[in-house]
Length: 283
Ligand SMILES: Nc1nc2c(ncn2[C@@H]2O[C@H](COP(=O)(O)OP(=O)(O)OP(=O)(O)O)[C@@H](O)[C@H]2O)c(=O)[nH]1
Ligand SMILES: [Mg+2]
Ligand SMILES: [Zn+2]
Image (cartoon, rainbow, N blue to C red; front, side):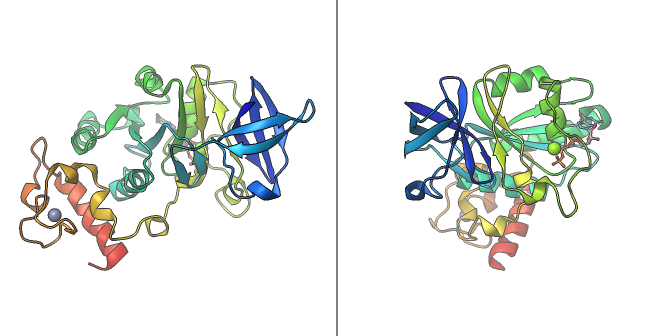
């Protein structure tokens, strides 16, 4: 039978088989090889337990949180409170690009930000090749559009603490017992666990709300030599050298196309690229 790993709690995995969730005890032979989101071949042992026999090929595996077969990462940033930190946003997008996980940029807290600010960031990220939705978990604006983009999918939420990730899930599923606001940010708390749960949504699919990407250190995931290929819009512009760093090379298509016009590499994106390159390679 085929199961779907829907949670990890301590050493235990939860495996959904035909609508029912069973516990799978860890198996030596597959130790460290089965992740939340994986599809697995199982045999049912009793009415609470299954044994995992094999893991199906996965389409991707996010390193943090460790979730497999992610259809889309919803990268939530508030426009205000806290102000949008586009260096942080671009580092998350680069990591997702490396791990071949598609991203949707959600600009939240529309209710407390000037429209121009929303329009500015929406333009920058759409122009970079991302889908962008503006939302407010408070007024409900944009939630229908967000729902349409994630229904039926396995979704991982990413973004800084306070952006409104949990608030957005709660707006869809008010009965869920999830904590909003300042919790567990110091010392003990959920940030210290590696437990992961895929929450089933009422519109099909699953959503994972773990703090994995809240504070992400790009150097743990991306090598400086890879970064030149991880900014989507850069690929629109061929460079003379295939290993171009887009910093100083002659015939660099990226350097020749920095500008605010549609289709160009927006200066804000190039700015964060340079900061990340400096951090990763010293260049
Ligand atoms: N004005 C406004 N406040 C919001 C909105 N969404 C969330 N908030 C508030 O922002 C704060 C943080 O929201 P959370 O949903 O806990 O944020 P989070 O992204 O889950 O944060 P962590 O779990 O720490 O990573 C809470 O006080 C929310 O009430 C919004 O759209 N507008
Ligand atoms: Mg939260
Ligand atoms: Zn170049």
